[in-house]
Image 1 (cartoon, rainbow, N blue to C red):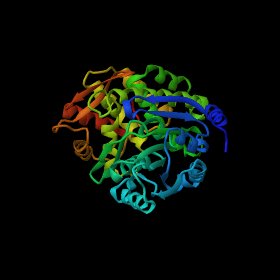
Image 2 (image 1 turned 60 degrees about the vertical axis):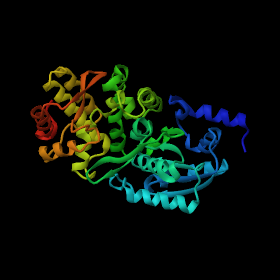
Image 3 (image 1 turned 120 degrees about the vertical axis):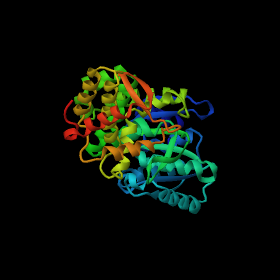
Image 4 (image 1 turned 45 degrees about the vertical axis):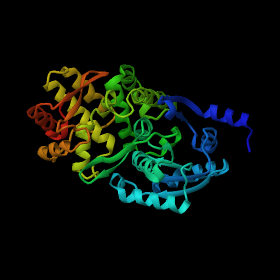
Length: 382
């Protein structure tokens, strides 16, 4: 076994960025770097975790990374089990949570035990919901393996499963003990999934970080080539903004709502297509452009914001519209969105690049025009 000094040296070599989510006694760190999976057992032991650990993953991710994570945990003294959930948003359901409960019962997990989410946002949300509810709460660790999860869903403690009538309707706020974002896992992502993750990075630049927006424009080639230093920089920037917002508004009663930019239309697209057509980031991409168009119609921002948003989304080959979907059905889906309060639909809309505002009950006729704009020729015209 390595000495403590050697372990700390190896971890320092691998960790490129550290982001703290400051929530008092529930504070935790987001560790960003290459090769963190191989050090995960010692990292978690150093964080005070021990005993039994149940890894929740899917077959695709498990094939690539489960053995590395298991071996590292076992070498650090953990008793390790695992359960695989089928891959896909449609499996983020109570039925699959039940399978995690069954594995937890079989392992005789205790309240000091840990559930680890090894995978993307679906696995993170589902495993986190299981951790929050089994025995009224186990230790929870996020090990995100997609860009989308590393910059968004793994941070902030929002865990949930879907209902047939809407996305994330059944959930809780439950913070992880630590987030291990291993950049090397991004190398095995399909290009479509990598680009879908970029939508959430772009979102952060559009809502609160002009510097990140500029970096995404100027360094697009390096980012799309997955240069590790470029990735570390944009992931850290996105995580820092989200950590700042979550630390200020953990339960989404105020400023955290701006993180929903693009999600009102995006969630409606996902639900209406039964999670079979769009990756989450792709739906958010369409939703951000729709929000920008609605903002121009309402006089909240000028046309340049819509143009800049559209061009950046196109730079990263993200969808900017849809075809053959009913505007009326999308409006019905939005009415069921969890962000609706007192029958009031709330939209996050851009004022300029890096600044947004929340608007209640946007005019129905203008919202319809914005949806028609997205549906015209697949949204190809600016």
